[in-house]
Length: 327
View 1 (cartoon, one colour):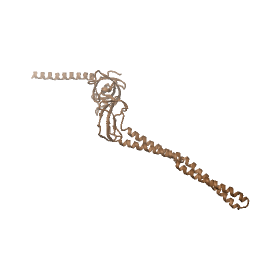
View 2 (cartoon, helix red, strand yellow; view 1 turned 90 degrees about the vertical axis):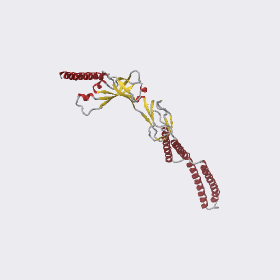
View 3 (cartoon, helix red, strand yellow; view 1 turned 180 degrees about the horizontal axis):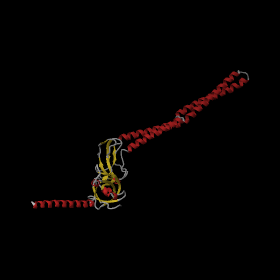
View 4 (cartoon, rainbow, N blue to C red; view 1 turned 180 degrees about the vertical axis):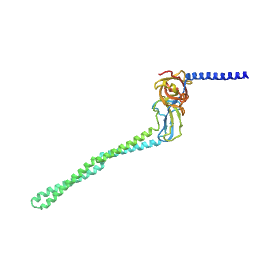
């Protein structure tokens, strides 16, 4: 019995010692272990504001595109027809304004010229008749009333000539100022419609806003694409970043602008990344923070911009070296 008791006590002591050794090892290993993280990327989604068949796809997944490069083309048939209609409206508005400025046509002016010639002929006849009657009235052959009548005929013919001449002058002046202003406004309105149609047509072939990598393509050539539905996703280099988690006790060593070193599978030698953001709130926060052990489980997420991010794929796990002091 005594031997059994001794064996049990020795076994318990051994288990306790082993546990203490393991705990000590884990504590030491925890402080040397790299921080866990991963590569994250903020994608840019390109879409067209109008629906239609995907006519042409200029890129493939994994390609790199330069800023301003055309990525795809939605069938522009409807928008091209609208653009042609808007251009025709502009031309029609300009033609109406030109017509108002130039006045009546040459054929219409010829009518006024004919009327003016006829009025001038009547005036010459009235003046000749007045010249014949005036000396006869002075000699008493005709009564003075006859001379008054001839004078009235002459004055009427003169007024008729002046009236026709004024109508012809007005015909060459064009429309009134308010009518011209209305015509100019119609031109601007039509030009606005044309600009809108041209913009809609350009939006059917979106361009890459920045240099980026084609991350994913959602539609293939010939498929129907609903309006505002992303056709592909781009991953700009500037939007590739690291996300890793730092324990609450070590957070004091990390500041925006600081530099960390990280490594990943297939990345070669360790790389550097500059800290851009530190979360103001802890992750996996326990509901009660009364004990020291609870605080030890607090971690804060940090984002950092890596150097040469082209080869880093979102989702790739990374190991970040711990900082031992302020940087």
